[in-house]
Length: 253
Image (cartoon, rainbow, N blue to C red; front, side):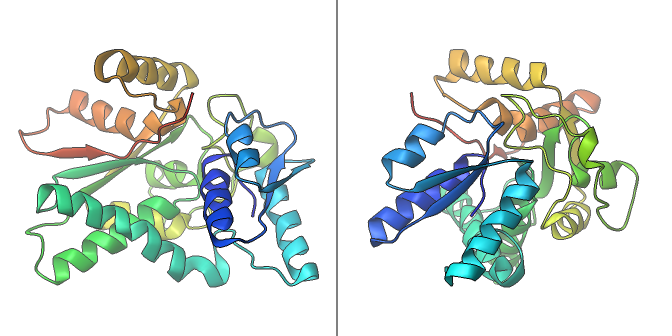
């Protein structure tokens, strides 16, 4: 699989627990802090030229050649991965015993948000919740097809121009010119009357610092993009008193 950090760390740990080899492709220009964590899990890291999408293609070719499992998003993995991410909705339900008014999440490929939608939809259809939460998507400024499509009221996510994408230490987990599950995420946002917004590196870093100081949470700056979008929505028009959830990614050390 190819990764910007979090997915590789999770896959490496899961593979080590199952006694499996795991190959993780990471673009050579990426400076993710999760590399050391991935290495400690025993995964084999392969640094590649090009961007994230190039790393995905190289990992797919490796999987086909060696007859390995291709764990990248999309394709045959879509149903399984959306079901897995749907478990986040079940965890939120277990805590609240109903759906919150809104759930905010940072998006890159859109897989997490699309999975959350599937999970909450299942709960709602089975009568477990009284409502569907609004899904709020956040990403890096001008670097995500989902946010761009939402703002332009497009029916589908169009690819961005690869040369227009510039990665930084902050936005690496979010930027991409092709969102694998972007159309499903876009549909989920609109079906729940949600919104999609973006944030600059400076804004995400400031929010991460604020969470660390106020809540003692060590949160990756990129993980705050969804929360930033929720806060921006509230500032635009005050949200009613209710329960709101932001999905955040922590880090070690």
